[in-house]
Length: 221
Image: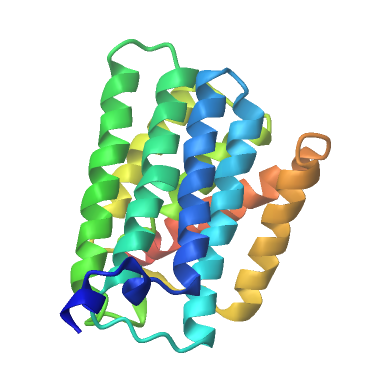
């Protein structure tokens, strides 16, 4: 039994494979950003969002028991790559305001780490809503902002900084149900596949993401 506890196969389950794909897509997005292929990098970030939603869906379908929290940790570590590091590097690489772009990038990373750490601590306590903005929204916003053609350095930095701070706020955000989740996944797929030709999909995705960010915030105030 002791030997089995140290065996990685003892902890791993099917949902973790989707989390690893999520992390891999985030890493590939970073590589594409470094090569200057920004549009493709944004598409990879959006694809990572899809795989992030799949791992949770699969875990619920198979009724996974994860008493040790292995799956939750794999998911969070993957998320920080795809939705923390990739958007941070995107902001740094696509804006020319020296030092400010570095500070905003660091803010994204720091708030992402704090948000995911808090989520892991309170996940079993607060199940009906998210406390603070879910980190995948960061990737959706920066990617759809670029793919929609509404890209502006001032706007990008401002929205990224604002979104980072909302991630570590105490504002409660609703969990997306299966029906709405399916619609969003379809919109993500359309944006990934033909978003460069029909910017309406990326623009719609951006509007929905910003509405999700702002409506609970307005209601709280």
